[in-house]
Every structure is written in C-alpha cells, then in structure tokens.
Image 1: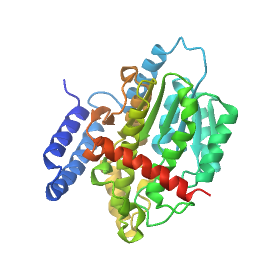
Image 2: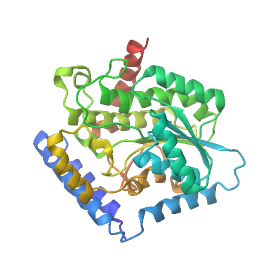
Image 3: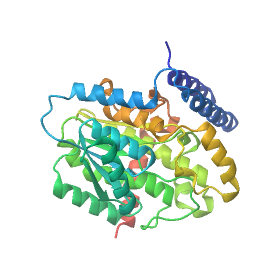
Image 4: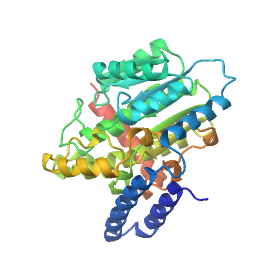
Length: 352
C-alpha cells in the first residue's frame, strides 16, 4: 500500500518534471506544492498509519538493534537544537545512544532545553557548545572547542536556520539568510570533516525546505541588496543546502560517509517571526490548523539520521519520510561545483 508521503512526493515530482523551464508553469507548480503540503499536513494529523512519536520510537529501536554491538561512544552534533525540530531530533538521537552536542547560539535557552530533555529521557548525554552560524569566528571557536574534547564525529545534523527576515548581514558582511542557512553550515561541516572521516561509517544530514522550489543559484541575488526578496532569498538558501549536500556526497563517495538533505514538513515553529505584523493573525491561524508539530516535523530528520535501511544511501533528497525530487539546479553537477567554489571564495574574502 502506497504511503501518504509517497503519494504526495509522486505528485510533486511529476508536476516538477513538466513545469521546469517555464516561469508561468513553475508559478503554477509552486502553488500546487503549497496546496499539497497543507493537505498532507492535515491528513497526517489523523495518524491513519502511525503516530509521529511511534514513528520516531521505531527509528530509534531499529537503530539500536542494528548497532547494539558497538562498544565505542558515538557522538552527534545538532545545530539549532534548543527548540522545535532540533530539540526533538536531539532527544531521539540521545535515546538511540548518541552523546549529543547541542550547538546553539543562546546559552540560557540551551540550558533550559537540556534540563527538559534530561527530565524526559532520564539521560545525561546532552552537552551545550555555543555556536553562532552568522559568525565565522564563532564557528571556528566551536570547531576548536569540539576538537579539543573529541576525536570523532559520527553524525552531524545541520538543522539551524532562519526564514523570511528583513535584509540584514551576518557579522562577516554576508546576506543573513544565505550566510546563516548555507554558508555557516558549509564552513562548519568542512571544519569538522576530518573527524567525520575518522569515524568510519558516519552521516551528515542537511535540513533544507520545500522552499528550494522557489530558489535559484544566482550570485547577484545573493550579493546585491537591491535585489533582495525575503521569500526568494530563503528559497535560495534552502536550494543551496541541497546543492551543497549533493556536491559533498560526490566528494565523499566511497568513504562510508552518507550525506543527504531533506524537507522536514511545514512545521509550527517560530520560523515565521520575521513576517510582517499585519500577517501574524492570519499566519497564526494557518499554523494551528495546517502545520504539523515539531515531533512530526523531526520524523524525516530522524529517519535520515538513524534508519538502517538508508545505510550507504547518499546524495539524496527526502520529504515526508520518502525520497523526493528537488529543483533541477540541485541535480546539476556543474552548478553544485560552482556553488562550492563561490562559497569558498566568500569565506576567504570575508574572513578576518
């Protein structure tokens, strides 16, 4: 029997196949995606198959069964771990046996999150290390601090992000959404890559978004303030997440390291806080009626991180717990290489 997620992904991928290449058809496709996403969110709340919590419990159980003979301690880093999807992902990873480093910007909120998780799980395997993805210096300090304590990293979940903010820049002078959502994680991942390689079998999980379908890798849209659009720029950053994951997967081919990206679903979190105040009333109604909760939103992240069935699977994009098709640019090897080189150039240019 076909799952609800598989059906939704099939409709979206089929529509994408016929609409790419035409601006008018792509607009129609984007509207269709939103409609399907909301319909999926509504139907998934009825738990026709299994509850989100039961789904996560099953992924945790399957992982523990597959890895119960491993003697060494396993380490995971989750960015943006103090709330929403990141919090629920951290909880699942700890239950699966990982020592979880919660990489967050706010020390107070992280401490509160750890207290909550320790109470809920009975585990003392959560640790906070401060990280601001909008600061190259902070990323370097985080990497240095982690390497002083640990020699391996078995799982990296690039989860943190911000959405739809007014135009602003990172501490290094780069547009905020691209600089945080993509470039910060690009620098973090590459800085930790030696420890990931030293871990043997390892996974890198990159949280993207359905918004990749409104993005395009256009350097001028990233560099020129006059061309900034908060929705398009968010889409660009999320498309770049997938392009980065795909290029990294190619570069790590044969190493035993799996790199995959995903859309977690339309989740009821604080990601819409930057939308205009005039829209908040409408948005709050939409969020409560149409969006899924953080537990359901973490399902795809937990699956990609833990599912034994995905052992050796790399360079894929997942949505609704199933493999899906991203925007065509994410599958263009040359464009992915161009993004990689552009990212390296920006980091070099803006590093002090």
